[in-house]
Image 1 (cartoon, helix red, strand yellow):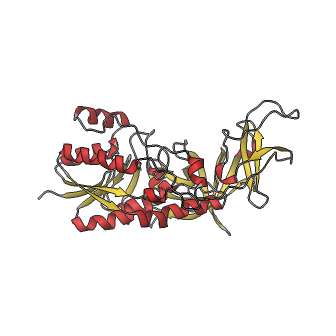
Image 2 (cartoon, helix red, strand yellow):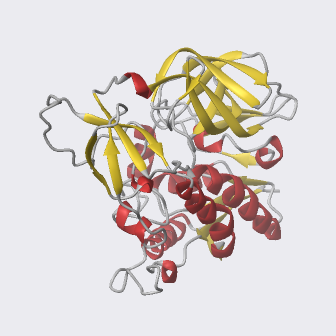
Length: 376
């Protein structure tokens, strides 16, 4: 008998090629399109709609997924996870910004939607597997392992790092063994309708809209001073939530007689005084950390013990690996860097690797340099 796979189809080229590959391998493929965002939620703080004339990007994506399903001759269902997404992803997203941190909603979307709500819904089809179009791999010889995708530029294990072996137990990643170029080539040669569709960028519920404008619809911004670490006022910010550590664009700092024309970067925040700190130069000393404290640490395998390990870590997506040592201290799990790392940002994920294997990760809480807490 053919085995059944329920595949998350987003309307993009990666999941489209995943569907083609699974069908070619002899599976019965059922596509499932997730509707995670209600366009009616696009309103300002007074409840006034902000997208009166726009067609919801999700609807366009669904139409693309339907074209692909029809082209491949597979079944496509649509399911709403709007309530779950708002509760488990969007509320987290807003709360992190309220704290002055920089969240990573894609990680929460994988943890709570794609490999939880989706997986539970897929059970109605009694599948042997579920599948996604992520660039990642799963190895099942003995203990399950989550491996980096073959294409180092597209590897998405950073966003899957909060998943457990239970969530991955029946997961397939058909494009994980391919490069992005190979995915595009397959799509073109097999006439898949999304072959030339651009990759989506940014956060799914924002789409192509201006991020700062979207954020203002949900969180009131409070202007404040931009200062140097020595206390000089050098400008005004439009709200701390609109800035992240290491950011250069959008500071609007003009010329000052006391300072030269080197570019300014965000080097710190103070929520209590509503102050944004800036420093000159990409390699400003305040941007380099030697240690961080994590929260919400999770490992793919329950048996993994991170304490004392000398492995590598990423602190941002597509960042190069950094050698680190992990230590359990009185206030939690600390990550010590072999060499200083630039712009380690609270709210972002620290993801651990042992060679090709993604071990898990946690959320960056506090950042230190030579034992001293940085103003992040």
